[in-house]
Amino acid sequence: CSSEPGGSANAASPPPGEGVRTTAKREGENWVINGRKKWVSSATGWNREGADLLTVVCRTDPTAPADTAISIIAVEGPVTGLVFERAIDSLGHRAHLVPQFGLKNVAAPHHNLLGQQGAGLALTAAAFTGTAALVGIFGVALMRAAFSFALDFARSEKRGGVHPIIEHQAVGYALADAKTTIEAARYLSWRACHALDTQSPAAEELSVQAKIFGSEAAVRVITDLMRVVGIDSYDHEAPFGRLLQDALALPIFDGGNLGIRRRQLHTMLKSSDYDPLTASGAA
Image (cartoon, rainbow, N blue to C red; front, side, top):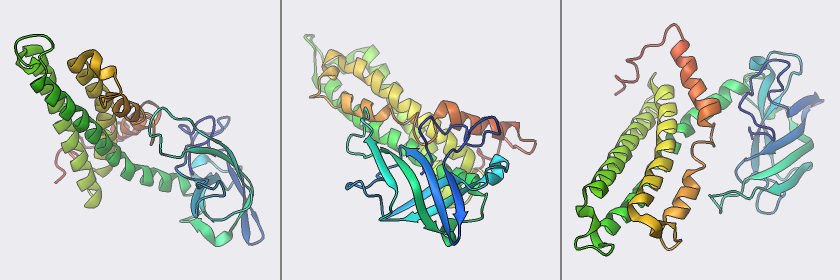
């Protein structure tokens, strides 16, 4: 449970920035958590009583610098004090419950602290490194589905002409560009996943690059393939509408590309020990 209403892109912001606003205070043998969260998959459960397990990113020291003030506490359900506010009416991923909810005096045992107190930002960043590569894979899957339909359409449809439209150079080039992008995103995402599995020093860089490239390519390629099909792509009988609705989330969820992911790459590039060949040489 990381994201909060009002955004969490600047979770580590020093004062006067707010950073993480959900708090956890030690009372006896428990942590008492207060705050609000948003965009956390299935957090409230289908019965709105809470998931079996929530890992809540919260501020455990109100005065410490952000890099030592944030912790992660496991909350085991069912729990008293979890307040459902609304189910977000998202553009895509329609079967995915992403609620907005509050935590009002939610109690969790002191030993449910994950890792070291104050090390929550580092743990959160590590978790999001792994998921970044998977977002690239999501993008590849959506592009493949769109390409398959567009290719079949181009092979079979004449659109009132003599030959199937794939014979036209503009259509053929558009399909070639789309397929090239799909394979580039697929291989970058595969390399990122492999780097994570092998604990390569290049894992973080490749994962963030896969997330940025794969997610933004998906939106662009699906839109370009809609131009190949033409106005019929705007009909829900074609798959493009639902594919694009899902693709639109990829650049802005799991750490937005503009507010978080490019910042991560920027930070790597500024590091004095950054080696631009590390990612290139990852096995």
